[in-house]
Length: 117
Image (cartoon, rainbow, N blue to C red; front, side):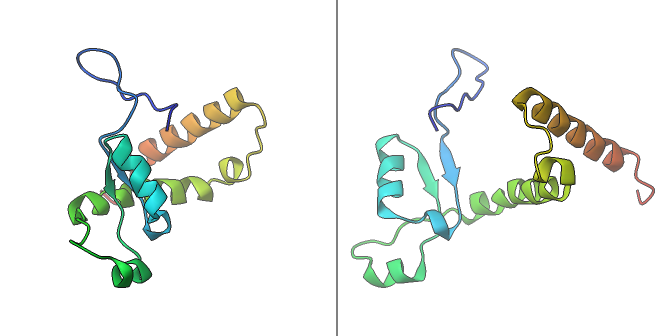
């Protein structure tokens, strides 16, 4: 999280996101405490075992924000289908980034010039 730089139209780039979405695997008290300390809103559903043991008011959950997470999940799934990127044939970071950019360009071109549209 310390390496994140979010561009801002005015002023310096932010170092922290405003919200962080994750699946139930990230629903741990220490992760939620870290996010609260850094003023980041957690968009993480509670696990079933945590709901039973939760005292006080239930945690809030932004369903609309969590649905937007599927865009990232689908992109990562598509990238894993690209064999060259998924198996990391390119060992140098600069070459790997170049192949990643080429795969994204190819994806956009296929979408733009699709026969189905």
